[in-house]
Amino acid sequence: KLQTAFSITNMASYNAGECEILLYQIDDPTLENFDFYDTLKMFLLLSDNWIKCHPVYAEGHIFLLDMQHYFLKIIPKINIFYYRQFLLYLLEAMPMRLKAVHAFNCPSYYEKLYSLVKPVLPQEICDLIHFHPTVEGLYKSIDKKHLPTELGGEAPSMRKQMADWVNSVEESREFYLDDNLWKAIPTKKSKAMENAMNGSFRTLSID
Image (cartoon, rainbow, N blue to C red; front, side):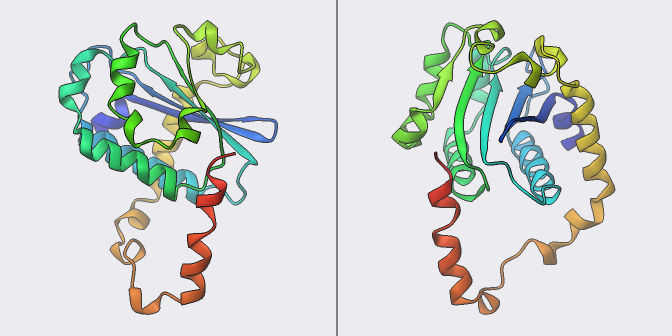
């Protein structure tokens, strides 16, 4: 199932000065192969790989979401409760300094989709979100040299980068299957580390 999720998804990152652009796209025009839970697993796996391969993080992050295939029929396929929890996890746990969120190729009913998650988003996050009806609208905010060729830009293909990411995950298969690396042991957690984590990414997540 994860192979299917990988096959209908494109994720890529591009350097844009001091910032890093993170791009997410569902590449399934019919949504027939879209499975919500498998998509979450796939996203988390690629996110872990992104963290693992980043010795140094950018000063800021810009998240791009392609909504071209976000049809209304995606709503019954999504568990809203889990999706909201997933968004909160991203805001609290991911080592990102969010500068902006740009959703593009937005359908006319995008506000209906946005209303499903907006209640759980902090106001400072909502203030960073911008919607564009077309990819051309994105060009006003993001230079085309930082966008992949599939979006009319000059940067390398996002599909090629996605294939490279999947290969990286497959090469690290044993790493991801080792449960000892993915469970917390409370007795071995120092108080100093706990206090440090409480005040780190939470204060840096939004600029």
